[in-house]
Length: 79
Image 1 (cartoon, helix red, strand yellow):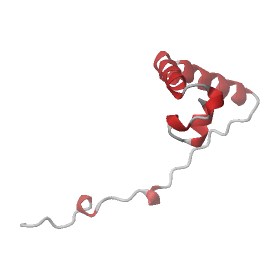
Image 2: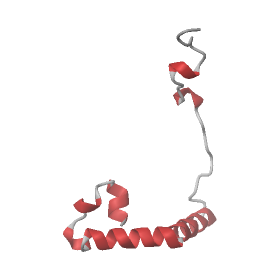
Image 3: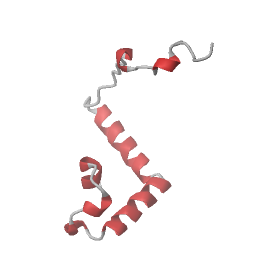
């Protein structure tokens, strides 16, 4: 599952050494539904934050947000 998350490859491209892709996919979906992935992420964040390995600074640069021309007050046809 971590190989798939890291590569972003289609499930069908999962290497044979991990077993049938359908089995891995079904387990991934089940773990997502029951909250296993969320608990794992929370555990890692808490552990790493405790030793100072997490940087909590967030920077948002609005210059990358672009609106469509019709969303910025462009004239509408017929007005």
